[in-house]
Amino acid sequence: MSIMEHLAELRTRLVFSIMAIAVGAIGLLIAYEPVLSFLIAPYRDLCAAKTSLNCDGSLYALGPIDGFSARMRIAVWGGVVIALPVLLWNIWRFVVPALTKREKRYSYFFIVSSVVLFAVGAWLAYWTLDRALEFLIGWSGADVTQNYQINKYVNLVVLMMLSFGVGFLSPVLLVFLQLVEVVTPRTLITQWRYAIVIIFVVAAIITPSGDPITLMALGVPLTVLYLLAVGIGATLLWRRRKTALE
Image 1: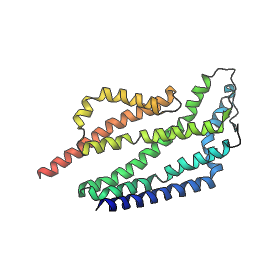
Image 2: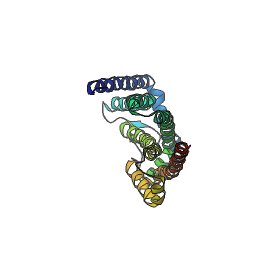
Image 3: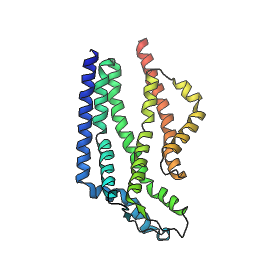
Image 4: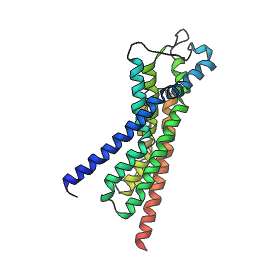
């Protein structure tokens, strides 16, 4: 393909991706009320169960556009999440002409595992949200009444779910780097101490709440996934070498 043909292909993939995001965003705009209730549920349940926290589970709009901006933020980021399989598929379709037959077979594994890992990461962030909020509220002081602005609460929840989801994609990247021989399993194993430190530093940076509960909830699974990714990469490389010798 010529450069112009590559650019035309890229434009086509971008159009399909943007359309997928738009469809997901429109769907969330229509279903905004149940989606918002789903996002608020951990906060409301926490306030109902822990009456000593001085909160009632309500969110407040402090300006005329707060509600609108919160709705649009949920729609846009939610649209990206819903369109994730389509986005990955279009990336694969754009890259596939440059891949070998064996690498094309691995591509399906990367797409499926990326979607599953992102979903697991986002679910883990949602599952630990009430514990993170309890810790943060507890550190506010017993005499502080909790009144949350809807924009700030939505930002916290969305960023937590996105940061966990993106963080859980790191094993896919590690396996890919091993397959293209940018790094070796031996190197990743010998440098495991540095890797764990980097994992927790990155987890502390990308988690918006900054509390230790969220940090551990992200850092510990990423450490396990790091070791699992090294094992998968080593196994795939061993099978590749074995096939080459036969």
